[in-house]
Amino acid sequence: MDNIIIRPMKASDYEKTVELWEATTGIGLSEADNRERILSYLIRNPEMSHVAEADGKLIGAVLCGHDGRRGYLHHLAVAISWRSLGIGRRLVEGCVACLDREGIDRCHLFVYPDNAEGMAFWRRMGFEQRHDIQLCSRNL
Image (tube, rainbow, N blue to C red; front, side):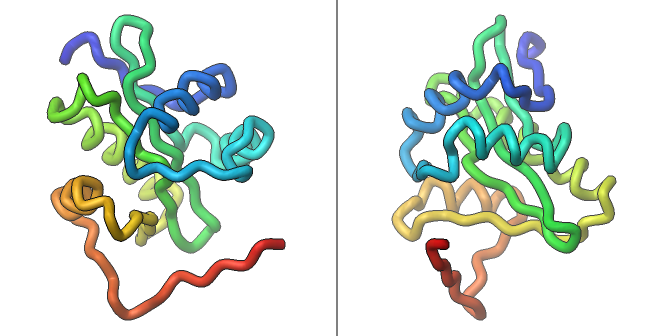
């Protein structure tokens, strides 16, 4: 684990990050995840999203940002062969620390209903599933 580095995501990480996301069950990508929009997200939320590297290879990634009120985590992924080593936890803890420094006191994330492995992870991380609200979306 000493060779694993957690660092802020950079524009140059985009291609490898998308490769990881595409290979990860439970992550749904859309047009909102194209290069231009992800780079815009990184600019709007500087040094809040993180990647994990081992020996120069990208093995984990997560998007993190906020709207001034609430924090949001998107697309947490750790390469299958690197799971159960605490990398996901380290990525999330780094994001939570960034949100805390920004004065954000609550963080939301989205999980597909059939992603049992993801829900189990988020519960272990202290996130609670809410049953008092529903997500509504509209294409613009």
